[in-house]
Image 1 (cartoon, rainbow, N blue to C red):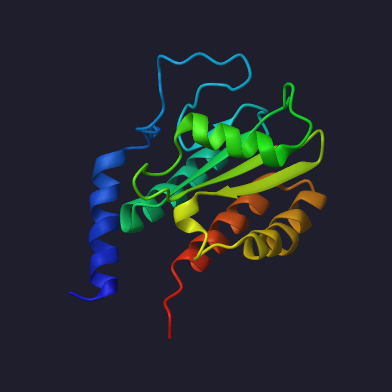
Image 2: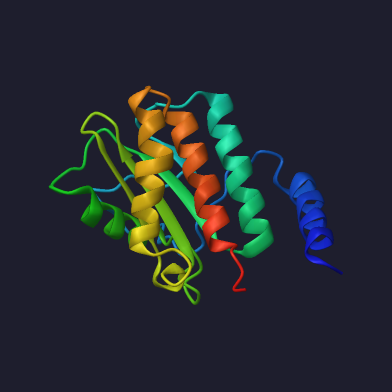
Length: 175
């Protein structure tokens, strides 16, 4: 079986299995309490309500297709308050760890954090993703794919383009 057949099979399995249900993070400690971080509702956590229901569903579909094909997890969070944090980078790292984004043994998660009112944005990748998605590459994705759309107040298109760029980057094969 070649890559296209495997991807097609994953898409078919995905379509029959997810039925638009939110995914959960298996490493999330449901018993832990945090006054700082919200509990995840799935891979798309729009706590600042910047996406429509259709946009959230489209982002979730893209994310779940990627996870089904690779096991990598991408999550999105929009927040209107960083709590006691002064920078979104530390907030994103701590939130990704608290939620358990990615598989623990692979550390293959990516979290896109957005604080629209504060005009702050960060892509946090797990240690297992660093070789495929470096800080320089995430910075490039933010500057060239996401921010141009955010400047037009199109948060959905910016995040969608960002996720597509992340997927392309982590799926690159060595020549």
